[in-house]
Image 1 (cartoon, rainbow, N blue to C red):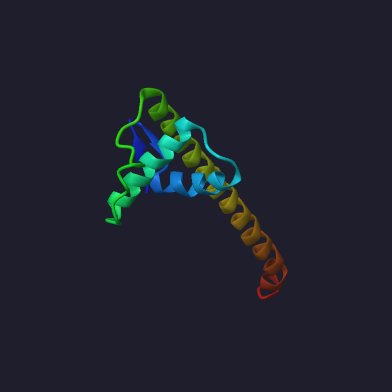
Image 2 (cartoon, rainbow, N blue to C red; image 1 turned 90 degrees about the vertical axis):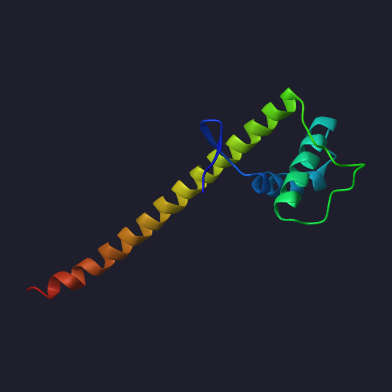
Length: 112
């Protein structure tokens, strides 16, 4: 499913969380990315009707520069997903072509 960010396709909030979560375990995030992470977490939790985010860490809005960074991240995730899908399809096509070529000599023998 394509989630559109304005007129350009972009990743979802859940994908942003899935991408950012392992990063939070490597090193602490700076203040901007922490606010973005908490903002997206609150949105995903509300979409899935989970418990409320505690008020002391809940971020309800972002600044313009943070919104720009979040949009960029969502577009980057979407592009990476497309690239991975194309690579997987090309590998599947190459494998199918090899299978057809391997069967071809046996199939031609049926018509001789």
